[in-house]
Image 1 (cartoon, rainbow, N blue to C red):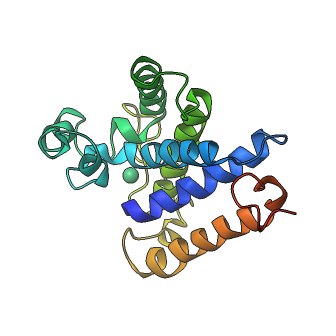
Image 2: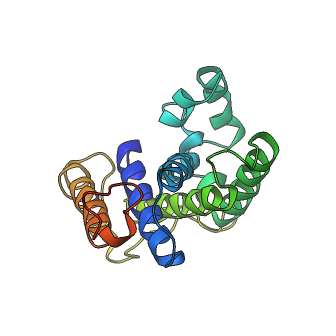
Length: 195
Ligand SMILES: [Zn+2]
């Protein structure tokens, strides 16, 4: 999948996750900002093994580090698309946030990490339904995908019409639906739609 599809999928999943995991909480502007931030990095993180990833455009010196990191990570879809990579990057993200961002800013550390995790998992799930699949048990075993053999012909080709004309628009609509079905939780963010 391409960056924009991963971003919208991650944001939709993280927003739905927020409403499901915090049934009492309102979506304040601080919470929305934190979810956006966490889901953004979580959903782009697995593709840091690609020099063309938008992730590299959004970090200092990314253009330079972005050329080296893919080689260090063993090329596209290796460590960062596995369970091992998930735990490693979640740990790293937690360390960066708790070390460099003060707890009294708008950014809630726990909510950031939660959104980061959901964004990351949404990325792996989306890549799993592509032709290439993902090496979920890396460094052991081959790439696995959904649906598995012999139905692998049903998987999606990254960047082609099904992703652009179906997956992406459906994700946008899903995000809208998640928000519309939780208007009672949007009072702090959008008083006009709150009921
Ligand atoms: Zn990927």
